[in-house]
Length: 73
Image (cartoon, rainbow, N blue to C red; front, side, top):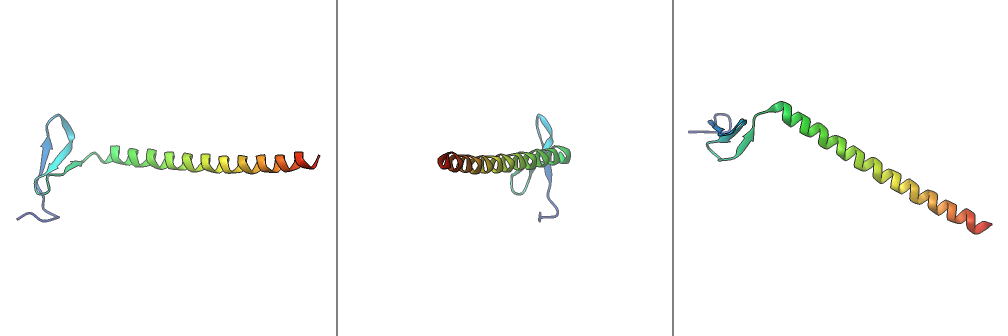
């Protein structure tokens, strides 16, 4: 009987890095390097998005301060 630690992985035709779990029928990517590259790229995009949001917030603050300064003139 198969368990979580003893699963038969069947190669997917046409892609050597993909395997099908014979128990759950899930497709599993066995290419660790591609997965690590994906995670790295995903983290980089999240960081860039956070930086953009920070810049937007700072710009809004500068615009508010500028409007207050102009109002005092």
